[in-house]
Length: 257
Image (tube, rainbow, N blue to C red; front, side):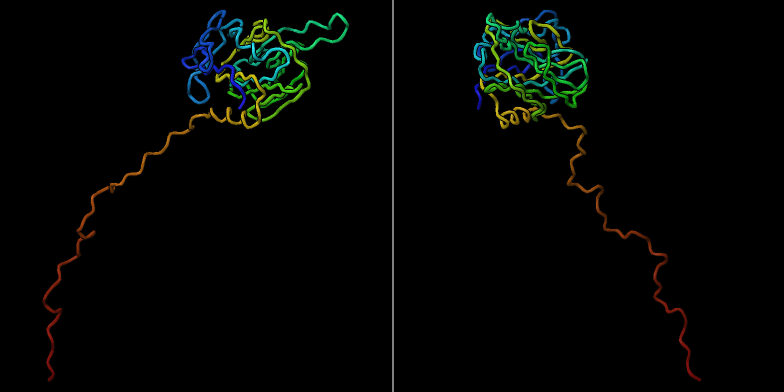
């Protein structure tokens, strides 16, 4: 199993790392509030957070440069516009002094202005997109995995997009939940069950993470069967005889002449 860096389960509607040493060392401009997740547990609504939730710097120390990584989360987009689910890194700064193109310095996921489109954010203006059947107000699961020069988007545990990219993210860059690079493009919506790994996730691992959250039943179960009869049994006949039997024959016998 890939090595877990941090897990934010959003219990109580608060972003607390309940796996590693980071605790509740987060920063929010504005406010967040408790929400209800797909499975009826707590989630974090970030609509009032102007720059999302900024995670502590230690979270990124093991996923910087071109190292493997994986980030998974549940998200509900309430207003579909250009907005980030998460973002780590900085915008592209162009080529090097020798004229060679610079490596992308960002790693994130965002929804685009067009409804149903999810963009892979490498700090270069969202050129890599995937169309998914998500709509505003729906909970869905998103994972972005980087391994050996490939970035792969999983939507509800299914691969939607793979693109070749050579990352070079910096430890000095911030990691935001519910916002993008430097806290831009804040999300109107909620997030839940955020996992950050320092290794690439396999399909089996993503399937497992996805299956841990299920929606509650949509209908109320019927009453339990009862072992008691609906009414007491009776030994009486169901009907009353029409008349009492007579011991006398119906007519007297006749004699021969």
